[in-house]
Image (cartoon, rainbow, N blue to C red; front, side, top):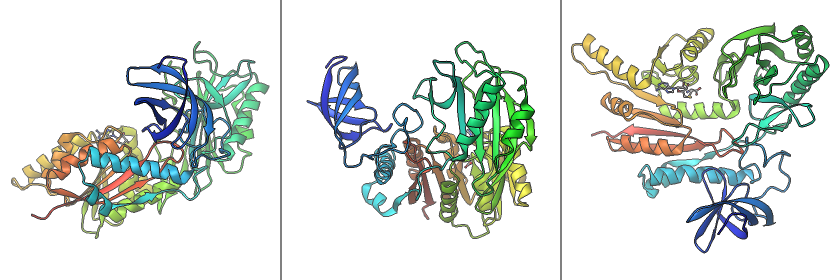
Length: 465
Ligand code: SAH
């Protein structure tokens, strides 16, 4: 097989990035935008000894899972969604299989055990317009017209699209307002290559419960000319609560600048998850799918089986979302987070909710927890610190093995593991299960419909010896 060869192939599997996989005489083809069940025509782009990447040319016979009219017009060129053209029910199966396969292959958990402890994936009833946050890059098209949209996969060329199907409806109105304003007052869009032009991004956040809206313009400059006019127009949109800008003059992929300046209203919006209120500023981390987050944290609460007597550690706590959610059912919660601003947000969130039985530590979980244990021992004449319940919600790379050892040494009765990467989850579970723990419950949760990402929650229990 060579570059530019055109082949016809039946798609029989899917890779972890959502690409279709087909075989011709044992030679494997990876084809983006094709899906399991399709018969396709594709052009070879990059050929290796045993496999090749090919570009989809035609779907000759569509898969039974193929959606006839995708919700989005730029579904293939935009880098945001990977599997939107696949029926939602089949997307869920794909994600559940991905979790199951990782737990078996990497985690060493047997099929039999898994069939008893794994619950069906928790999907969305309405898998569109779920995102409460969008960051639209601003640029110009070939004719010099200002556009807003999304980056194409793996590049920084902007695919114009103001109507992202995953975002809220008001995004479009806000973007039109900003672009019209820019055209009227001749305000330039950022040109990444030349590092010229003013407006780089528009960040929009929306409080699903409060209906409060935040707009933050990211500028390659110190301010926005006629900003008062823009603010006046934006605040005519119902729910507008915060209009700000952020200065970012660096040549960087990082979207936001470090500082926020107020144009109109206040610098934050408020939203709720369950009965906990959160203050969200342009720079705060906040879960992007509030509907599923509430379900996920509800599960965390169920899985933790708190009676009100426990001390709970929430490691990788971010702005304290899980900590505060669990605090009402626990005696004490300790949160650990490495980003200083997130720790400040967490403390502030505890305060505005009147929650007093939480304490947040700034630092790396793998350093803070053992240090806490050492100090406890010193202060209690050599008595070892015992942890009741430990919740971890690490980034994709998972937990450091040293941290897992500390959790084991502290004799935690239960560990609730929230994971955004089933492979590192499986790796870490293998360590814990080798140290006297057993998997109690497993459930995948779909936080990001139409993408290949999947969240998993697992509870493991210390075996009574
Ligand atoms: N549980 C939170 C956030 C989870 S995201 C929520 O649901 O909102 C993972 C978090 O881990 C991020 O906030 C990141 O800053 C933090 N983090 C990354 N490495 C860390 C480490 N070694 N120790 C503690 N926190 C870490």
